[in-house]
Image 1 (cartoon, rainbow, N blue to C red):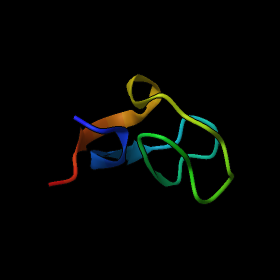
Image 2: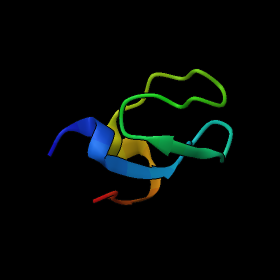
Image 3: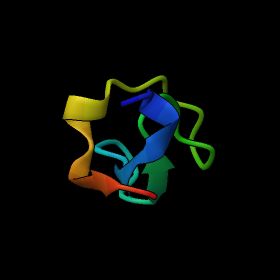
Image 4: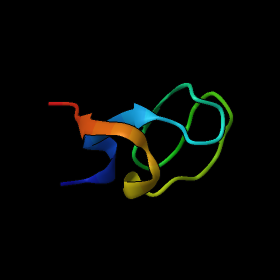
Length: 41
């Protein structure tokens, strides 16, 4: 599954994020690092 289809919470700022980057704080992420990760489709 592509990283963009994984959503959860950013481990750095606890805001909603996708599997590749947090739009809120700009952190580059790996999908396995997201908190409460789930498929967005």
